[in-house]
Image (cartoon, rainbow, N blue to C red; front, side, top):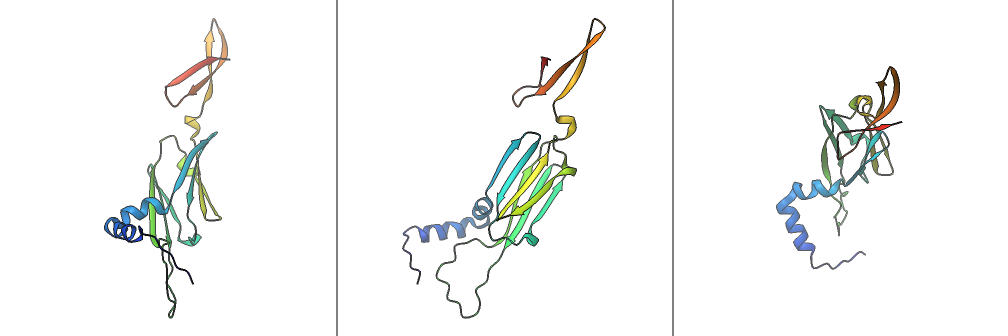
Length: 154
C-alpha cells in the first residue's frame, strides 16, 4: 500500500485548483529550444502521451503543439494518489521569419517530441563577391545574434 505524508499537498492542490489551467499548461509540457548549425531544435517532454493525440501546426509564424493524456480508473479501482496531469495541453512558440516553415520535421520517441526547424536559405551566411580594381574576391557575410551583417575578408 502506498502512503504519503506531505504537509504542502493541500496547498498545492488548492493553488492548482485556483490557478487551474494556467498552472498546469506551463509545467505539463516543459521544453528546451536551441540552435544547432543551420537548424533550431525544440524538444518537448510528453511522457505517457499517445502519439496519435499530438497535433503540430504552423500558422504564419506560430508553431502550436497540442497533445492529450488521459487516464480513468477502472470500476472498482481505489485511487490513493493521482498527481499526473491529464487532459489536453498546448504550447505556442513564435517563430522567426528566418525559419523555413515548409521543411519542419518532427519525431516522437521515448516520451519526447523533437521538432527540427531549418533556417531558411535566405537567412544563412553566404559568400558575396566584391569587385576591387576589376578582379572580384570572395568575402563571407555572417549575421551574428547581436549585430547586423559582419564582413570578413577571405
